[in-house]
Length: 92
Image (cartoon, rainbow, N blue to C red; front, top):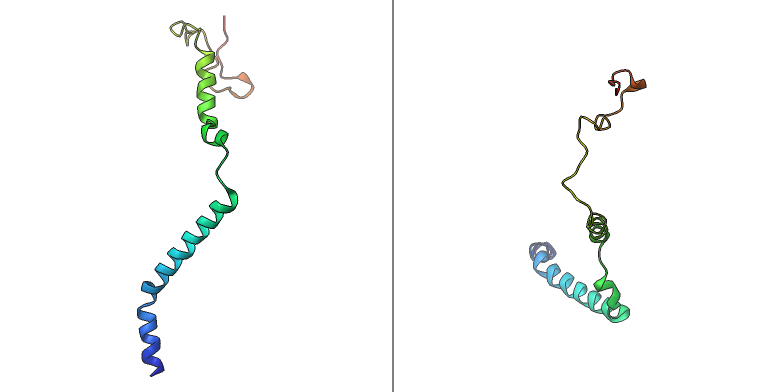
């Protein structure tokens, strides 16, 4: 008789454990919300670091003329620096 009972419990375990886990999670989240309370209003309005960085970059380039750039022929720093500058052409 015990083997039949254990076989039935084993086969029906997912149907019992899921609702129990769901209720425990729901009660836990409600308890955490009750203990912590509402988040402060500044945390919801705060910008992320990437948004702050993008805003700062936009402010930096706001007054510049982006069509005037240095030519790559004049600028030698676009290539990685060679060891002891052996392979770098001399600027005349």
